[in-house]
Image (cartoon, rainbow, N blue to C red; front, top):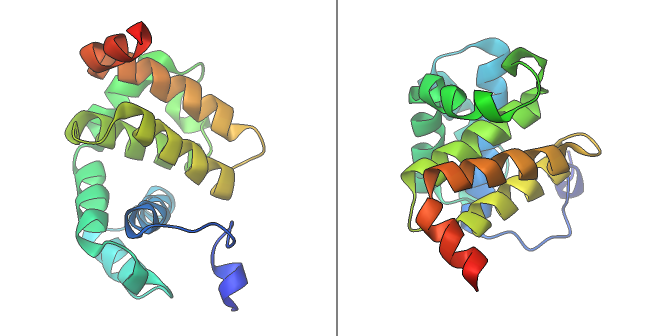
Length: 156
């Protein structure tokens, strides 16, 4: 496999944190499809080509945190989606879980950054218009989870 086929969007300059999100999404995809233990998923992903360029600590936080709190995260996004969780593509499902986890547990990251990263992941790995759906759902979730931050941003 060449480096150009390793990532869906190889021309972008990806930061270690963005790479951690990419690998976390790949881990969530594997977990959603195979229902493997998070430790096994993490080990598989850590051995992937290019992982050394990712923020390994942030990857672990994202993957383990998202899997551990997945029931709670699903409960927070279910009222905001127009279909059942089972009808979401695995990429949309994984990105929504990842974005929900970051919105909920990483207030130091501006909500717009969390949403933008989720949109970029969906553009890279998901279907044609999946990024629009993810953007809309996470925008509503941000209003629910971070009303002060979203409100302050709207007043600017």
